[in-house]
Length: 388
Image (cartoon, rainbow, N blue to C red; front, side, top):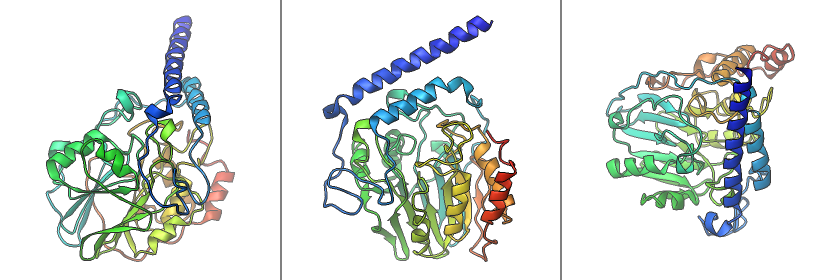
């Protein structure tokens, strides 16, 4: 039995190395893989060729990306086990939610449906089973929280960047053909989306599009990188979004690292935030790691939440596709433990079941700010060590 298990392990590793070699071969053909998604004047975050984080680079060089991928493959057998399938009760949201009432449904990963002011807003819609090219990549462990057939007519879609777990051309094409929504994204991603025959509006950080009086979509800064292939890295812009609303704004962080940590306050300066969708997962790429440059984990998500004014928030970007080392429920469970150590009201930032809609209360007095000292003390005492 032990020999059979060892043989199976090495067979899996060998097959994955073949995939790595194939990807390496493809990245050696830039004319085939590289794309110019955007041409424009140079700015503080665009050099005329590629975009960059003004607070420091995030995108890995192709060689380092393959080292990372090889490490992931070699350590696959040591990583915490994930379920192959998680049961979910798929929901059926209402057709519309009028006035200042707000209803939110987590579809899974970074896909969130927000209904308010008679608008149906969808973030980074991904209904595909695999997040990757040619059917290769991380597979879903949970079905979308709402079937496409049960999804109400969508008015606005925001797309944060062009990684496959956030920009799903098949889903965007289906929604465009069905609903003709307004699609807003960062510069260059409109070109990627256009490959599927779907029109999108590409905007720079700080630019906005008015949907109706008092309701604007503002493209805001975060800290990440972009690529559909390793060779085309940073050819398109990554972003977060603020949707201004009469009853308090909506904030979608997209996919992001902490960076300089100033971008949450920049978003909050556009008006009080009522609801925020904040990533908490894919933060551990080696045992014990508590942060990564490209993603925020629970600790930095709390910092973002605090910088936004501690609104009602949904932890996202966990539990749908396996992208990193941590165990399945580590992100939300660690988040809850850290909020408790910080002495704040964790009810405003708690995980909600995929597919189950919940009502977002009106803006009120925020809970006490989380205590950095309390969280640091718990960490020093080893209270978070149980989370793999």
